[in-house]
View 1 (tube, one colour):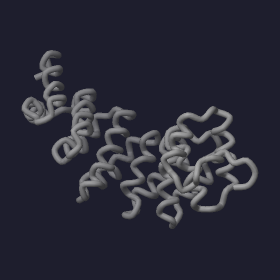
View 2 (tube, helix red, strand yellow):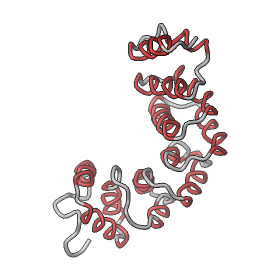
View 3 (cartoon, helix red, strand yellow):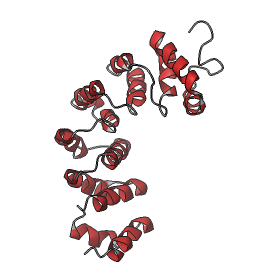
View 4 (cartoon, helix red, strand yellow):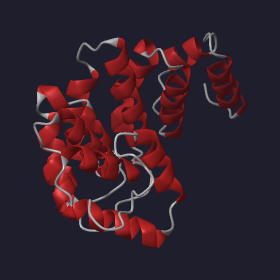
Length: 216
């Protein structure tokens, strides 16, 4: 990386310390790391720099990261997508639409909609939600879906949230799906009866709250 890198003291192959460093870094250090990233070309070192921005937003123009998110290098592409997840930018929205239409990246692309979702994106998200997934892929999908619709309240997410509630194995995500439906007044009466007896006490508590609020 040359000179005094912003990653000095953090091995570029150790991803977790870089995430922690990014969370704790001062603003000027994040700008230095961002500038270093824009100058870097080595894939492994780029991965390390990108991991710094999993939590804090990348503070400079993200065009290079947008390009890296289209890389044939899967690890580099994933790291770039993670680094773009906290940014709102029309270029990132276009990238999200592009990637969600490709089988290899359709689930990863959901991260990019968290801050860039538009109502006409719903058919794209529904297409992914109702596909067959393995356990790991489904959980990644449901986590991104609840993140998206918590930030973008809409009644149109009802079908996706019902799917997450019925098929999800993650109790916190299932609870969040119910909370989203309650917040948007789209929890079906049949599902309201079902959550009353849910195996998760936190979800049963949501029924109690809705009953106390006078909902049917």
